[in-house]
Amino acid sequence: MQNFFDKLEATKMLLYILSDPKHSQIDDDLFNEFLCFGISLLDGGNKTVQKTIYNYVTLFQKSEVMFAKFYSIIYEQIAFLKRKDEKNAKKEDPEATEREELKSSILENLLRFMQLFTEGHNLDLQNYLRFQTNSRNRYDMVEAVIELLRTYYSNLVQGNYDNIIKCLDTLTEFVQGPCPENQLVLIDGKFFEVASGILSKEIKKPKNKEDENEDEEKTSKKQKKKTQKLEKDKKNEELEPWMLARLKYKILILVNSLLEMRKSDAVVKRIMRSLPLDILKKNLIKIFKRYRKQYGKNYTMDVLKHVNRI
Image (cartoon, rainbow, N blue to C red):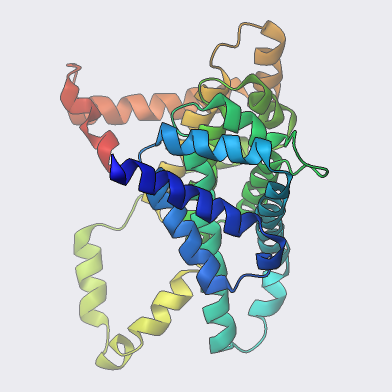
């Protein structure tokens, strides 16, 4: 019982700090730690903590400060990504790289934090993240994450992979249940441009192990010393086949979530105009063929075991 009350008090304390105008310029390292703390409080979709958050944001107008901070983090990252090509042309600055990694970590944790706000189909918080009824200014976090996803889509490289996955997971949690209003934001927005683009991409066959071993033998000792640099360079390389396959999987989950409880033909038609049937058909056929190749004709619980690793 004591742990229960401690968790509630910790939640209120965290919300107070994040909503205090005096703390609007929190040091990035400290802010990241606060996000991690919030994630630990909400882990598993804690409904009591979610209720505490909802009560706080609807009762205290200063909670607008927290949403303004979240919104600015997302749009600062969007602006940074749009300038990144120009920065890459310049000499690498170790301090700038470190700051970039911290900003990326903050964004990843923020997306996870907001995802946990709504985990378990919390309709109240799903709607509040889109439209803050107790604020003078409103910050549509659903629209912001869609815009962030679209910006990442213009630069599908390995360094952005984790945050692209987080965007898709967060948007899925925003609409599942369903939340009809948030579904419409995605349908009316430009999410399907991203969905259609990713689902249309061909997955290249990965190198087999024999090729990899041969390449490794050819690698000189001098090149091996450059492993760290190569890892950095790899961040700017195109997605590996398994990464693209997982993105497609996440996209299909989100598309399926947009169809939950949707009985209107008009909505379905709008989706199909934006996401051609032949693209969906092609991907579903490939998924079915992989399933048949791995599991045969029998459908058992073993088929679903891979879900725990995704």
